[in-house]
Image (cartoon, rainbow, N blue to C red):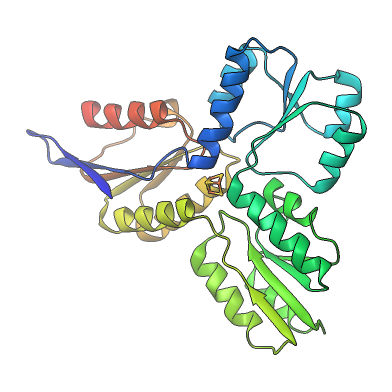
Length: 295
Ligand code: F3S
């Protein structure tokens, strides 16, 4: 679905992707933290920034919410409540908190929780777990932490080619929820070149991501300029930028309106706007209004 806004008197059209911005899991996580604040709770800590968006994290900080970079810091900082964000965490983090009786609020996205359950079960049954995703991403690190046996993270096609040289009997393949669907299919095809005693492949890419990526691609194909809004550390925004740049050479990656250098920009034709899963609606609206009014 695409919102198209055409404006009389200009030769410019603005298309804002309907799937831009907070997904269900991120919205749920952020809402829960604000609910804790409204309940008057103090000593709220999130384990890592609640989302990859500096604006939101700053607002929460101003309201007293602090960030633990590692759960072991809880021993020193003594939080009243720890919020587990939508990315999820390894099983060892729950064990750590339970051992110390630390109160926690778990807002792991249910789609990520489902992957934890899959890898835990399949690895307990003896399968080698293959996670297609970015090994440095907290979601993937969380998934790894639910495997009860060996696992491999594959981010590039060469790594998939290397993997099939190993002699694993049974494998189970899952994906980071925000991974690029085309690449996932490509890597699975490589893994299919080898025969296994048992091979389970589960596409765990979240629909919200697929939808956002395919809508971005569709808009980018017809746009003269694309604006991708999101935190610089947000991997799903980086992927959107990658997709949009492929189809529209004039693509900008911004965090907020301030990053658009208006003095040097000239928008004409069709301007497409999309945003990552952790971009608040007010930022998307601000950018689209500005583009519409200023150009
Ligand atoms: Fe969950 Fe999908 Fe968002 S996995 S956190 S709803 S991108």
